[in-house]
Length: 424
Image: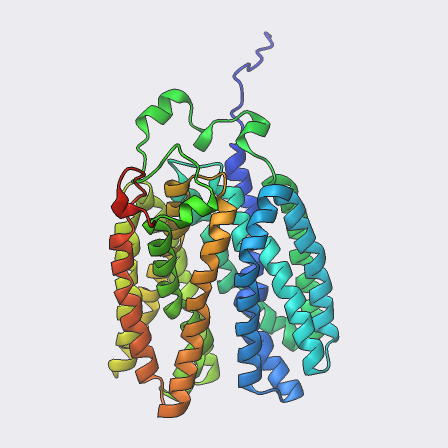
């Protein structure tokens, strides 16, 4: 017999996709344990210590404010120290923070633990993993961000695992185990995410020259790499930031108040309300898949603008249509809009300003964006307490989110020679 050896070279998996995969694991765990899991943990803390919803809500808002304030410093650290150092610092702090929460018995101990954990989750979270991802993609940037965001949505869907752990082994052991898994995952992913295309001599998007010539470029994709100060002098920076913040008015208020609204205003049981909240990430996953397909083929501003209208319509339908179908409409519209919109809002910044200073630019933008994530829950809660229901608060937030489409209409790509696109 003749020994025939296959000499066909195996095609390596593009390193950019490996980074997307590693970052998706981290973001999924963070979504399950920190972002979506906080509400589940708050219930346990309320039942055990008798802490009020107001106290727990203000702690939540405070951690988000800390993340926003720290954003510019983190962005600079990513640029000077590198992804690996930032993520591994966050991994160590995260383990300390989760252990501190598990041992907390007083309000002061809990607040200190949450402040440590907020810093850690920022270092391993959104800004860091997004910065690590965008520098590998240009023509497939929306697709990469959609896959990354799908991990976040999947983590939200898996959040009930925490509740199962609370019931079976207690909230303290569950927090320690879950936090340890997340910290280990972040430490592992840091080594992968730290790479750049120049490190491994691979082309952007994994496309060879012939393929790159055929693949279309999105609106505003530039070869110029802006500094943070240059980006902040453009109209696009402010319009994108305000548009992103307007979307988070609905996202954050629904995360904080959807279960309360369903149980108080629609007489749902706690279990039924949790089921509804758990279905939203399923439609978010559908939205991210759709956004990844459309984002590299259509105008990202158009996609984001339509999603803003969907967010607003979802919230208004929820409080003004007295029918069970209104809840279903909210779940579908809000979930899909969230999934479609999110990746576009990250990709468009890299399209407009380049990837070199993306972390620093996003860090400053995060201050504005986080205002929406703080204002939404606070406004909804205050108006619900003063009026007796959520109708007025959710209506105002829905209208404000829909109005955010204006920001995306005005968020044209920077034009250095056009005074209208630059803020003097």
